[in-house]
Image (cartoon, rainbow, N blue to C red; front, side):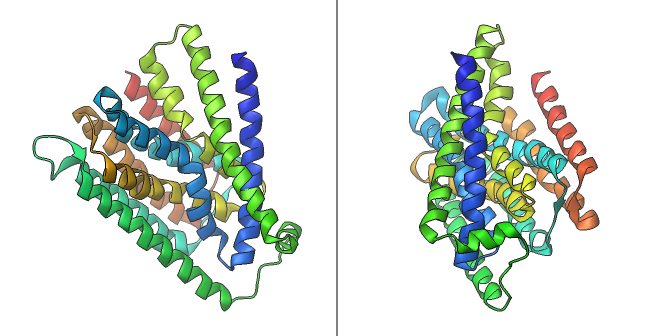
Length: 321
């Protein structure tokens, strides 16, 4: 039965990613917002909802479970850039817009630094994200989202609408309700598809005698990034590279400012010292190294994708051994 849910979850993920990309393209046209902004807001919110649910549930549970709340976000952010962006660029090389270099990456990197600072300082002898730090992060995501949407609408009003390909034209002709239906259906497909896939993969690994520690740093760490992989891979396949890049950078920003912000606002999020001394440095390093890769040639091509994937497997190897 686990193999059925594994395959079924994978199929639902693919369909969910396809619906999400279709709905996002249509919504971008209707709302006069760039596809990059849609990728960093609507798509990121949809694909990062598993991280929010896992982190919020772990933090409210308390005890040993609460240590998963921050670890989940750190692991997901590393996987989003190193693994998901790497695999996505192997499917189709991603063109990087100047806006991603001048605005989106700096916000992602600043958020990552602020996250590490909040984890390390202001909590006495403990390492945690407390209530006021969570509120600060959550306010920042609201401000940044409003700024992006207003800026994009102003820019698009001065530009000729994009009708460069058949898909954009068909999405522009589609009614708003249809695009919203695609969008909502895609989000649900990603959430439930990833849940079924993850649970089935975990059960299969347990039956095969794999230890819980190995499952935690491999299957579970990868599992919360499956929606981002599905959405970005479909976007790359459809040559909607703005949505693919926007989704991944936006997801990392969303994970820190919204997931940690909202969770930290209602519950203290503790973490262990080894996570701060090892995993957080990998998160910072991956977030930093992607900038020169984006800057050189203003694209993420296949050889850069290979480097990112190798970096992720290096992180997993060092985590295990």
